[in-house]
Image (cartoon, rainbow, N blue to C red; front, side):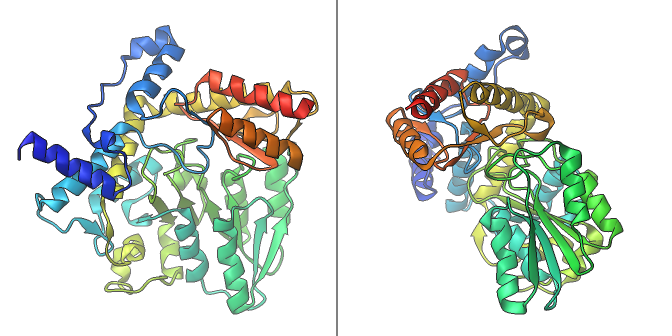
Length: 417
């Protein structure tokens, strides 16, 4: 195929997928050498932002917790797969929804610390949470214990279950900020009652970025015979995740937040012995084939496989950078954000000062009027922020320290007025 035709096809694929045409055309430089990181970490991360992402210099992006940014290698993987698919340059159906994608799942499972047959690919954590909530047999009067810090994608599935089948839902109020991980574990485990069948909670809370002591909670719940469901939408890519070590029964992930993947990538995990407890939500051929194990929940009809080529590319991008280096930078920026917030007079921090309990997501409370002014000023300055009175700042490797400086200048101004 001539280069001109290839570029034209890639650009058309990019448009079809909602990606900028330059993402399909751009050659991405190699990652900077490791010695630059050792000599000048800030110069290293600046080159990563400038060379690996499409972010213009005038944009400050502080809302990675809603939807993250896919770097150029990920966008290229998506558009190249769409291009090859359109030309039938591959020998299998260019889709998922009837396929088990074993090679994809094997590579992801090795990174996430589970078996391939315990992992299914989904569109997002909300879908994975609904696989569990709609798939479990629960009866009227059975109780689901959860918290008051859940995302609608992790709580509304249980509300639907309550409306249809009469289960009970009880919320545990999480103190903001909490005293420590031990307090959180004690609070959730001690709240388990005689009718509690399921404990459903976020591994990292969505509005406050609070890191929960997942393993301790799940092990204690299992001793009481309670099923644990972890909404891990903010975990994959923000912190290390080993699913077997977490000891949960079910896990839902949204790697399109922190793991560099395109929108529409999700993961569902179930401990192997818990797979047969679930009915499928969507039925097509293979819905009742228990030999498929977790892949049974991927038999949902034709879907766009290009997003999962992007998923694998995002994982490989993380591994090439070095996961610990990435997690360390996320946490460094989170601590920087916390320190700046702490020095704003009168600002009510919701994130604890114990940095074991947050990574790259810090939150604080503004009044309604302050939040309105802050959002207006941020739009003027081209700062993308989570607009709420419970303001959340989420940083990633493309965040510049000066982005935080400008943002907190705004916060100081609106809280002083």
